[in-house]
Length: 417
Image 1 (cartoon, one colour):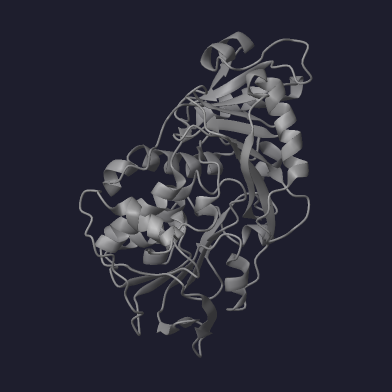
Image 2: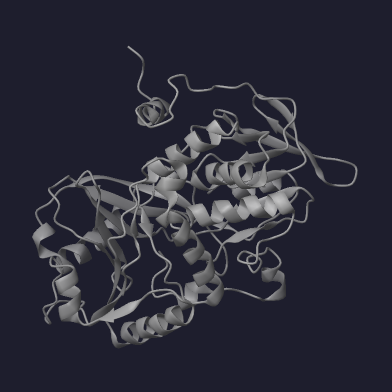
């Protein structure tokens, strides 16, 4: 019997899809590539796909130290939205949301994108004022968002408890109807399949251990556990480990890594129609296609690379969930975990050229990485191919921390996720 692995699950997931060939390519590394992507998650796989599809660079290698989709792409809570406050953030995440809306057709693979709506609850006067500010700012940027009264919020999400005597009474909510969820591992499979069909070499179990630079300081090769690979362009998109890889080229990044806690319940029949988020109690919840309630909590208060679940955080979140949705009190938790998120000082990402010629980076998404997947991948590919940023990611440089041009969604956003 063949042993079970995440990669065998990946292969099984591809079988039966239109255009799938039974024999998965397992190439050996070539001596040289036009471009190399480090990181086999959704962002990296997507960047490799867009480089090949839109920019004609087909001699591309994607390097993953484990298996594709085995990091944050397979460990997130699948929420997609674009209702961020600042102009730069709204443009970035709405670019991604527009790509999400046609992604299954683009990849010819069902990523299970469901625009079921994202409802963000207000529990205090400050929440109400903050959300209404968000709504006006979003509409000014052409991003949909609307205010719901408590009664309208319950009509949209019937399980919601809006009684006045609970610890965090619901005073209303902001609803983005275009928001929703997608199947996280299907996104990785879809991009991998499409990139592979365009000739991209996807090299798993191939860890980067060094970056070589020429006499002028530009990238000339990457050293891997499967041998050296010559290339003039390297894009790094390895959540939780980007600073380690960039450090091999002498580039320091303003990043800290934290475990982000999440859990799922036992599966039940469809009962929850949308995504509900609450910053005051720091909880967000949706229901997966398998029937599990997918519940997100907060980040640990200390930096760490651990992927353990933190019961001290999750118990607080579950208390809040059970108060907002009393019918879930008797349900059992199935499993919990922590995903590693990179956080910048302003809680906004970096998608940019680095000071090293030929070295590019996509990192610092904090809790916003999954929702940005197609947009971040598309913009990294553009930046690598043209050696200059797209207008959408031009503000998201490393130099903004030096110059003070911060995009501080940490202070502005009603909820970071």
